Length: 258
Image 1 (spheres, rainbow, N blue to C red):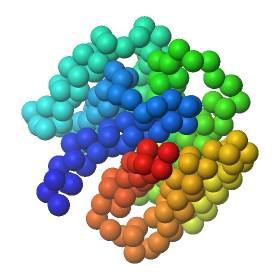
Image 2 (tube, helix red, strand yellow):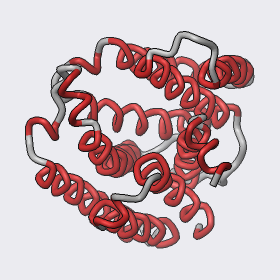
Image 3 (cartoon, rainbow, N blue to C red):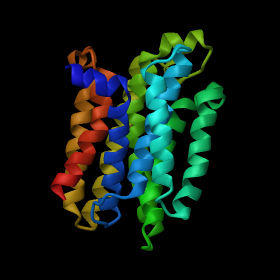
């Protein structure tokens, strides 16, 4: 339990989720899962962003574990960038700027928060392996993968917005749960997951890529349970453990099943 707490509190856990989704993308675009510098870029960029968010949110000024992981993430990020292709860096820069602007100003734009998070996660975990590869890809294929990833991340991000209703209200941030009700937001989350499942079905079944579809099917069903089961929603590590873990689970399922 101490190890789990340490992984979650340090934001290593959520950073690993980004890595597993990126590895999953390799398989979805027809590559063999391999270690590349961009995997470390994704890991350290996520580690930096989430620890920076914690520092800003909590207003921590004294030296803490968050400062330590910020320092480690900066060193690791630049070490990984030095080994990556220039094209990867060109793709990464606008994503990084968008993420940093979100930390300070963009989050104040009404109802943008959840859509921006889903977009950044989709872009970072999909476009970097595509750019690193020298292969040419079908645009429709890529659009479908981006849409699938967006819907999945969007669905598991909604419960975070529901949890943050009071703090967002105090900060005068306008989010979907403040506009709608909790039940309506959960319904939207369910619709997003069902849409993710249906698009995945037509995308991969039509091409007879069942080793990709079935892991995504299992992932969507388990995530539907996570979101709708009242007892699970009350567990201590529900948000940062179970919901973030849904991304890790999906990546592992695709890696194992393919």
